[in-house]
Length: 167
Image (cartoon, rainbow, N blue to C red; front, side):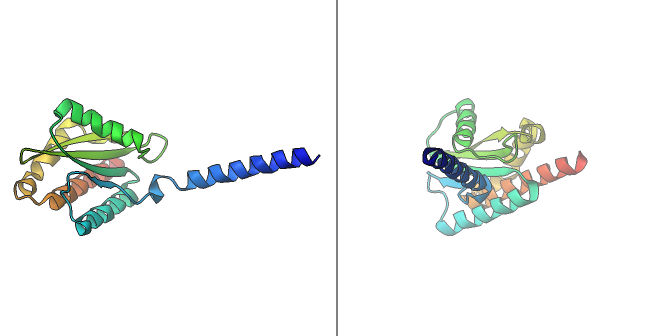
């Protein structure tokens, strides 16, 4: 009888641990800026994190930023963004909806690619992404990468909100 009770208690303990891990999902995870290229100051990264948190609350869609130094080519960069997103278990809802922008700095030029998951694939197509990227080009030219990212977040938020209102 004692062995049965211990087995039952172990199962309850494992279930409680699993529930606690589930409760600490991506929404509780504060880190969404991964600045490997050193483009942002600590304060800038905090500002971007706050903008991402607002984006998440407003759209119920995840968002992450990854920077890296080096050139990978557009086809590979998009795949890196998607793999990074999946590897880190980003995303909200059953479709893991979200966006990751991948910036790679090479020879003084900043290249941007994105990975979309879940319903964001239907929201931000290549044409919209290109339009958003062009609209922040001035910030990049000036070396104001923080403003460029904040503009990307705001533009993506407008697209997602407009799409969800139109459903």
